[in-house]
Length: 361
Image (cartoon, rainbow, N blue to C red; front, side, top):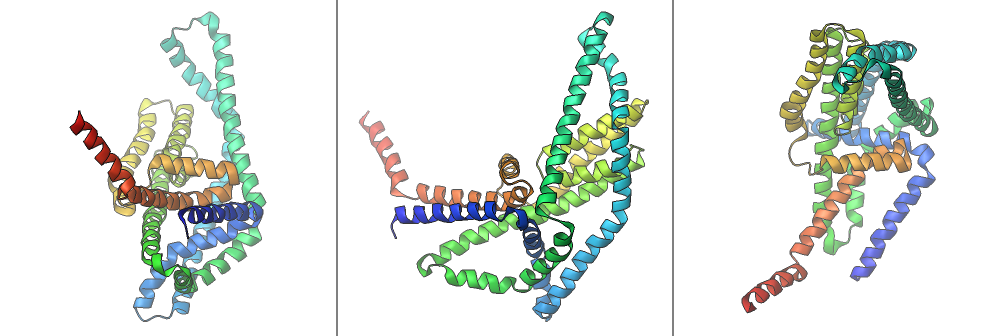
């Protein structure tokens, strides 16, 4: 097979993948979640197998335990979160008004705005806050519409556990089957690239998931202890959105600070809320991420952010689910091609030509 034929085959395979996602986007979410759960739980099944437990029994125990924990967590958290979401929605106009009242004097002093411009300043606040609320509403409605379009309650509760169980049970067989399809002349090279992709995904997805959960619990407890209204929902949302680099923490910090300004009169209370987010960032950057994610992920934060936003813009929630795996594959492929180029005569001949030019000069 020539280089051109190989390139065309890769382009064709990628085109088929895009077409498949576009065609079946409305039903993919339960299968993608099941695949993600199976990938996440496979190491646990491997450990049980190493303890002389059959694959089927190990899969049954791990799958049942995982979904039981999810159900218990949902049963405990759902009433609290639902109550806070309803209260937050009802109080949002009042919160915006209170923030406007408290922040306006600061802006007036900073910008040296006179009393006669108060009406213009009020219009500015209303327009700015209205735009922010509208943007939040658009993001929320798009997410809700995407979830409603691609996943109904029956699919998530019934299809996802079934898919996760069977994929987890047959994981090793599937890996062996794919390995048997590889061209024998390049099998070892392809296996190495798959190993790097698996290392990248395992380091980021499994590690970052653990980081997000721990951060969400920390923020929720910290903000609730210091009396921030809706601290539980803000903290959990901030932790879970930390999966998106920078955006998650900044969004949670902005909402938490706004609520603190609206509800607290003592600057010390506002400072404590800010302190919770600062401590969370210190924990994430110095302890959680280095220990749970590691330094071998090779996925730059900007690349992850671009992949998540691009996937969400093109395919909605399904695109967000696919963003990190696709980004990992592209990253490994680009590094492989760059390594091939640096080891090729095309690169070395260019260096030799530069050396000859310098010698001649």
